Length: 320
Image 1 (cartoon, rainbow, N blue to C red):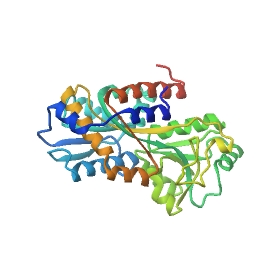
Image 2: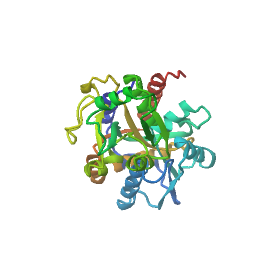
Image 3: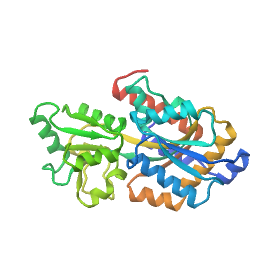
Image 4: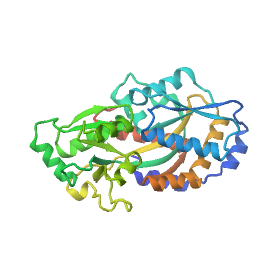
């Protein structure tokens, strides 16, 4: 199993030589590039894609325009389906992928899988936190669980922005024995709107989707699924500190090209994405959103995805 530590070791071992990669590739885009985002505007995936797009544009990393195309729906399945059916082997297409695009076809075998893409670069890892409204009565996850156990099953509702959020709730449910009502939306942004509106009592999410509202105290975090507290959020205890034996669970976020992309353009895009993650703007984004940079290219990323697939299936009890 690829753990957070093993992914980070893989990242640190990769010497990124973007100029060399680009020179070896012998290919550059000759027409407009389409950047497919298989999620709605406003969620974590969309926010990351727009940061990457801005870096590519501002630093002139490619010689042609790059346009964003949000294709939300079905936990990433609509966007993957679009790439599979209309963009196969097209090196002028790039797509954002994450844990949701991998978990969706495990839960829904009819959905397109990551076999439709050629992995280019994992760029970061996000940890999951349990969020509630700022004025909610619970001060930590332990009190939240006690409230869930004192009420009938499914009395506490979660809004989710994708199947990775659903997985986090599944992990939490298995660890606590509390059955929650899960309401699914197209993005973390939509889930956050439901929480702020008082339509649900909680969300599972990553810091980058909630930081602004966390800082304004519109929401608060009750616990984090990791071994240690965030240095930037020292008041938020880990689940294990609170006696909740939930396994650590993170969101990987990466970039890909369509399945069948030839080697030369695939190497070109690895070089471009290596420059993105090495940029000061990306480093600032990582710091501001309490994430972890984890750049792992090409074949190493593909291996990580194989191991992650097994992890997700084991957690869900759905063997291959």
